[in-house]
Length: 231
Image (cartoon, rainbow, N blue to C red; front, side, top):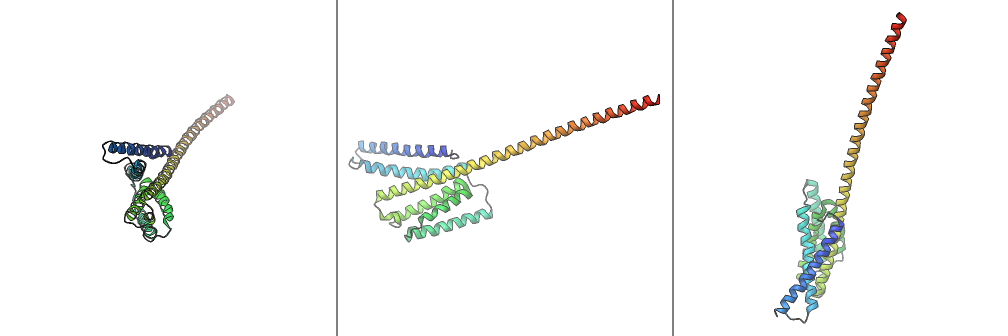
């Protein structure tokens, strides 16, 4: 389901739409039941919507990627690359979240690298690690998000999650389509080579038959000519 940019845009759109409907229906139900007041309707619905949308974009993408596009081919080289990615991500997260150095943006090349190397599953896995670490730090009052009010922090988290998830999924789908096109091109080239070889073999067979017929006719003409001369 996440193999084309069109499917990904549908997934993101309908995921956000379902969260929007769910937040309104849920708050209306609680309001009618007088469990909560109607005073901060917009603020509470926005918070509800952003929380649901962040969870769907982040964890649903992670689960779907491992169900449909798991990382199957493991070797020592890929294990080493994965460990290096995790180590670099941990170092950057430590300095950006816990030491407040403005280096969070340097995680973007690592996400792109993980998506190129391990596909959708690798990109979403690294993204989950980054966002969960950032969220846990913010909940403890640590990191660049902890300096904002709670609603602003949630808005920033949801926007960051949506942007990075869209980037990873769209990049992975583009790579998937390129691999699919390369495979089709290779299959077509192999089929074309087989067709050319078969036709070349047929032409050579026809040429050999024509050569044999020509030799046979020449032999018969020579024999008839010798017979005429002898008589």
